[in-house]
Length: 360
Image (cartoon, rainbow, N blue to C red; front, side, top):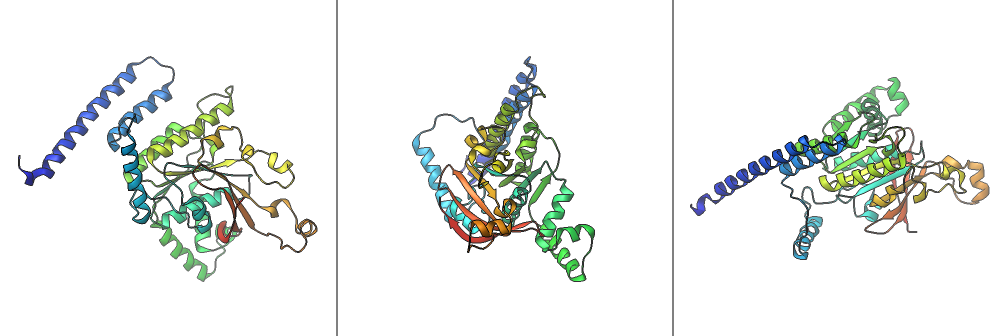
């Protein structure tokens, strides 16, 4: 052996070690296949986990000393001033939100809740596009809208053309040029869309891992949680299914080291309550959602529940908040909660910043 060939020797050792891990993984998967079990989904999940650890070089988590944990912390801290791939937080480009959260932290699950029609899907896609423009790779599970509908909505937002006229093809020559420019910009963004309806967590985990291995993945958007297919039948408890799905989403965010935004429906209790301001207890189907989430945000718009005349009577002298949305951060596991305002451009299906942050 010669020190001049150290790199070659290290590559040889690494390659041999990987092959040994692959042989060991194959043996484990073979054992799983021979086991007599009724839970096929759990067996598939264990097999995928085993193979994924070989590909990524991950080892089973166990006891580690403080020194190892704090060494990693110092590396992550330096990444804030010198961002490195797969370490730095994902920025939303909504300055007030980035200031409040410190960016979307990797391995965090962020819940974005709202009643139907308030724009939670639009905001999630906005954040996704902003992150991609900042250099992050993003994936979208669109369980509600087709990829064509979603792409058309994004194009309307980017080209600043009324979505209805765009859908009907009623465009001027200048608007046609803006569309061409917008398509050129959007086509270069590292954004990947999967519009398969009624997916299970097994399918979503597998697809996300594949995308992460092939292209890298910094941000994942799931729209929306209640449409994810559970493992049970109709007779099973939906609350338990949602709890399991919520835990699985959080585990997936940790495994793939990405920020995960999951949209969620709210219960009708919001509309029956005076003021209509959402709370954590309004998250639909399961209390596990708020427990598993690192950040819980709600969209609230006064103009949806209050007419201009009613607003003038109840709030004399204050301007009517037409198209103004409150983004309420009700839970933030590692930082402060608060509220900020966004402006919703209804014709473009897009949110823009309003420079104001109000702490609770």
